[in-house]
Image 1: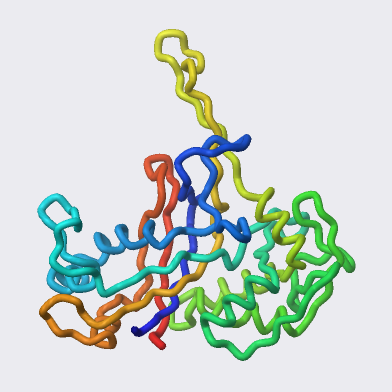
Image 2: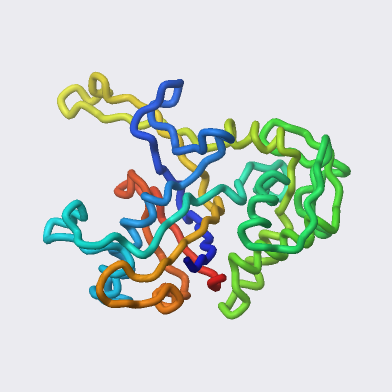
Length: 291
């Protein structure tokens, strides 16, 4: 099997939900069971990309990659399985409200170790206790602290943050595209590595909660039972994941590397998750080189 890394950035708030919540939020977002960090399940990507790539790589290749469907889009009676497998998209950068610099793009050592493993990077990851790491030209510093949401956190410039910020922004904003250098600079100046415990707390509490209602046309007040809350991943969050491509399982006989080369390398715009009619889930997808 051949693997490739993808990055996913939501341009608007993103709601990939679990159907129904058991807590104070009626419609929470999907989270990993062990870490409780937000994710986008691979199943939420696969169906969207099948439709998005259909015209780009052709029906025959789509059926080879994603599995053959009948006229109603069902794969239950298909004669072969798909050759492509989507891993869940894991949280890499979480935008958090900052007293200085407007917004911070936060991550933590736990996440960076996973990212390092998947991308096979040779970069250092320190354990952080009570001090956050920022880049040399950080816009987040207030003296020797940063202020995120309601937290004051000790912070200092560190080469590790500089190296990771460069690595991540180069993946997100390739220099071959105009204006991407400005985006790289902007994100790097707001990049911060938080201690794992602080990041975990903010990943639980700093997501966006919106209250939705439905108005009764006759009374012009909230319709009975039509008041609910939705959790969203903030706009400009960044996630990453792994796509695996195996040899074709149909009669085409195509090998994994040949199928992998069919995946569009250019940035793909797509809509993921629910609530798309109210502007949720507009995303950009970038696929890296195979490995």
